[in-house]
Image (cartoon, rainbow, N blue to C red; front, side, top):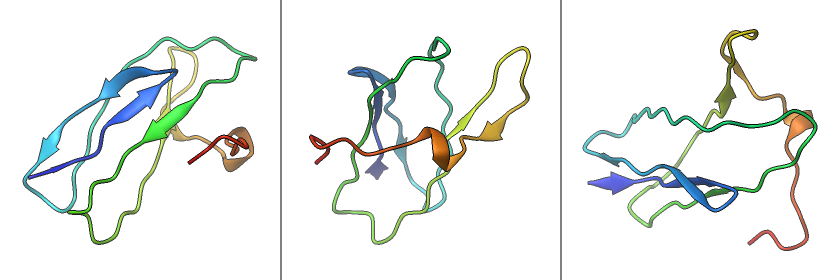
Length: 78
């Protein structure tokens, strides 16, 4: 079994274990516009290769992949 936990601002949003090489998970968290949030994804050694899509949606916006222009690294990123 494999795991890909995802945290947003130190809150565990997704923590599922998978028996497949093509997992899919959904988590919910309330985010406010014009604020930044820390996102942390941990990959265990069991994963040989990973491709990931991070999406968002709201009542006013259909589900879409978060544009790269909204994501950035910080100096403290590991």
